[in-house]
Amino acid sequence: MAMAQSSSNIFFTFLLFSTFHLGFSSSALQENHGNGTYSGQINSNSVLVALLDSHYTELAELVEKALLLQTLEDAVGKHNITIFAPKNEALERDLDPEFKRFLLEPRNLKSLQTLLLYHIVPDRIILSHSSSVHHHSTLCSDRVKLSSQESGDNLIDSAKVIQVNAVERPDGVIHGIERLLIPRSVQQDFNNRRSLQSISAVKPEGAPEVDPRAHRLKIPAPPEKPGSLPVLPIYDAMASGPSLAPASAPAPGGPHHHFNGEKQVKDFIETLILYGGYNEMADILVNLTSLATEMGKLVSEGYVLTVLAPNDEAMAKLPTDQLSEPGAPEQIIYYHVIPEYQTEESMYNAVRRFGKISYDTLRLPHKILSQEADGSVKFGDAENSAYLFDPDIYTDGRISVQGIDGVLFPLEEKEKSETKTEIKKSVKVAVKPRRRGRLLEVACRMLGTFGQDSHFTMCQ
Image (tube, rainbow, N blue to C red; front, top):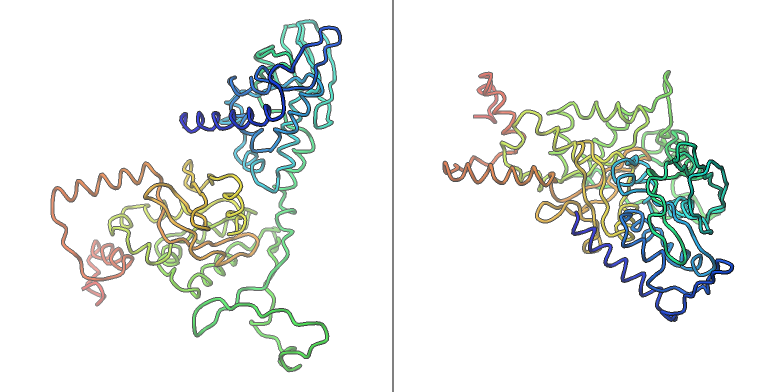
């Protein structure tokens, strides 16, 4: 982690120096002691360059991701600036993960820029210990309240300044603060995103149609031009039937105004089976665990889910004992469920823009790393990885199912599993079992424990 952070800082420093030195003279910055203004040129003694060499590396990375280099360069060229920089811990551990994920989504770039510019005042502010209150306009046009307490503490809004005058340069100053400042407009955008009313305002789409002969989703016909003859006879077009009935909108229903999560989970499992190639995943959800019921309850309470479904070929590669251990199927599936609504397009756009994205899973605290690879999205890292193989198998606005060609495991668990397998191989030689489905082998083993396997011919 430290090495990745260091390389990121080196790249950012190179990028910033390249931007600053292009067309500018390194000796052009001259201080005007009479009026406190400068010539508008940038050199290596700038407060922006000093930000990279300070302890506020998390803030510097956010500035890079928000594409604010040119904006800050222009601000420094016109006047002194004051940066109120949150400490790294405030952006790494103390920040709400859901809020941080909201800021890093490409469609919320404006909110991220507003939040960062809220920490920068276009004026040089040297803090003192005198008791006073001042209001300053920031680069995002909002105003912050700066107050000095009788105890000697300085507050910016309600955040304490923990490092007064931490960095001083001819064109600006940096003060370290204990936590992130959040403007009201950004907080409102985040609240609207989390609101159930905002989530439920999804345009309802018809249930996916499946070709019974090929067991694949039908490709919708192109829209007809206005005024063209109807494709179906009038009687057939008016007749009611499941193939013509629109799917219910994903909105609160029932006496408790909850979402009908159980029905939506049932629909996506049926679609998974009809799509073909994901029977093992469906069996785990329905027969071996109570995960389908648990997922239905989550959706009923307003949560959204993205399921990364390994196909049958990937599930067949799992060792039999890996599924037979108590709680193992649940742990595997939990690691493949992301508590967000993501489609193939949104995930691909994210990795194209930011390179690597980490998604939270229902198996806390483990996360799934995603990145672009061969024009698709690759999950996991090193040898434990899987590609997005069948995109958007099921998307109804609350549940998204994405087919992948491998089974994912947390990195430390993968290493333990490989070590355990090597120990077993060194103790005894494994006998190749008769060709049989993985889930059937687990079921026969469980029945054999109770002496009931003799009742089933497939277990003999």
